[in-house]
Length: 545
DNA sequence: GGTGGCTGCCC
DNA sequence: ATTCTGC
DNA sequence: GCAGAATGGGCAGCCACC
Image (cartoon, rainbow, N blue to C red; front, side, top):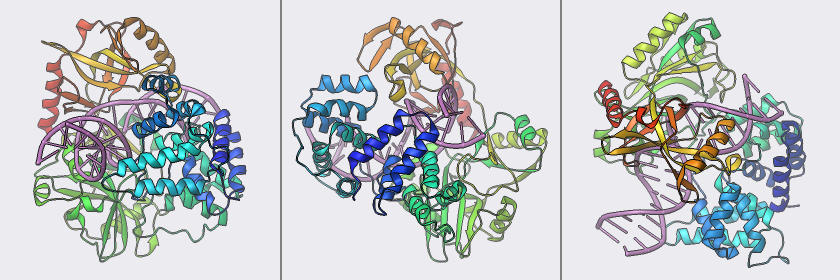
C-alpha cells in the first residue's frame, strides 16, 4: 500500500509529542518497517525536511513568501490574520494547520495524497524554469494545499520551510533505521558517511548491504568536522600525545574528486561547485578524493567576500579569474586508486597524499608536529601572524569520521575584541522561541547618534531570554508587530570573528558571526563603544592581509 | 534594461 | 557559522 | 557528550515588475 501524507503527518505528530529519544526511535522504526522500498527513501528524506538527496542539483524553491501567498488564496485569510497566526505559533506549519481549517476548497471525496504524489508535484516545481516559473510553483503548492487536511498541510509546510521541529533529525533517524531492520548503529552511520543521503542509507539498512559500501568517485561523501577548544592548554591536556597542527584557512571546504581525465568539486553541503573553479580542473592523474580548502589568493590572502563572489557564479570570466584567483590546500585523502582510505589513520593518509606530488594551484596544507601547550601556542600564533583564522589540530591516528563525533579533530580560533552595544530593536523568535523577544538589533554610538551594526540571537540562556522579553516590552516605544523598537537602555557585550563593510546597517559595517557574550546590566548607553572603535578594528584586521 | 524580492547556500 | 538544552 | 533547535551576514541566480 502506498504511503500517504496523512500517515506521515500523524507519525510526525507522535514524534513531536514525546521528548523521549527512545520513544521517538521506536515510533519511527515501526513506521519505517511498514513502508515499501519505493516509499522508504522518500519518507526518510521528508522526515529530515528534504525532498531530494543533498547532492541533487534540484531545489524546490518554495519557501516562506510563496507559502504565505498560497495560504492567503486557499484559505481566504487576510494579511492581518495570516501575520497574527504566524506570530502566534512562530512556525509556519502550525499556522497553516490552523488557517487551513477554514479553507474554501474541500476535499472530502478525494483519494488521499500519497508521498509519491507529493514528490512528483515538488519535482515539477523544482524543474520548472524561465518565465512563469514562480507562478507555476505557487500553483503547484496551492494544488497540494487544496488536497490537504490541516495536519497534512502542517507537515507539508514544515518540509518546505526546512524545519520540522519534531525533535528528530538525521542522527535519531539513523538510530531508528538500525532498530527497524536489526542492524548495528555503527554500520548505519558508516553507510551515512559514504552515501551522504538518508534515503539511500535507509535502503542499505533495509537490505543489510553494508559490505558493498565503497566510496565512489564523483559521488560526494560527508565531511569530517572539528570541535572548538578554547586554549592551547585545553588541547594539550585533552590529547597528551603528538598532534598534527594545520593553519585554519578562511575559505570554502571542498572535496575534490579526480580521475586521470575529469575533476569534480563538492562543497560541505555536497553541492557540485565544479563550475565555480575552472583553474582547479586539473586532473591529478590517479583516481583520488581529496579533502581541503579553496582559498582566494593573489600576492597574499584575499578576504572571504571575494571568494563568495565566485561561489555560485554560473560563468567565471577571465576578469574574475584575474581578480580573485584561488588555490587549494589539500589536507586529506579519502580514496586512492579504487581504494577507500577513510578507516586508515591520518598519518597513513597524509603519507599517501604527499606521494601524489601535487602541483600549483594545488598545495599541501602545512603540517606542524606539536605536543606541548607551548608548541601549540607557538603554532597558533604563527598562524594568526600569517593572517589565517586559527589552527586545526588532529590526532595522527584519527580515522576519517563524519561530524563532531569523537573529538579527534579540534580547532582553535582567534578571539577578536568584543564590543559593548545597546539594543535598539527586538524581534519575536520562531519555534520554541515563539512569543519571546529573542533576536536583538544593536547599535554603537557616533557623533550623529546611534548606528546599527548588527543583530544577534545566540549566547543567552532561555531564562535570560524570558527576562529580556519582559524588560524589552516595557522599553518598547514603537510596536511593529513582529518587531519592536525599544528605548536604547540595555547594553550587551557582543563577540564576533570579523568586521565587514556593509550596506545592511546604517553604521556601514556588519559583524561576522555575532553572538552575545553577556548582558552588561552594570553599563549605561553612554558607556557603549563608538563607531570610531569599529572602524579601528576594521582597519587593523584589513592591514594584516 | 534596471531593480528588488525570494531562495538557497557559503562562512 | 555559534550557542544552549534535554536526554 | 551527543543530537537537535534557533538564528547571524553576504553573495549569485532567478524571476516579477516597472
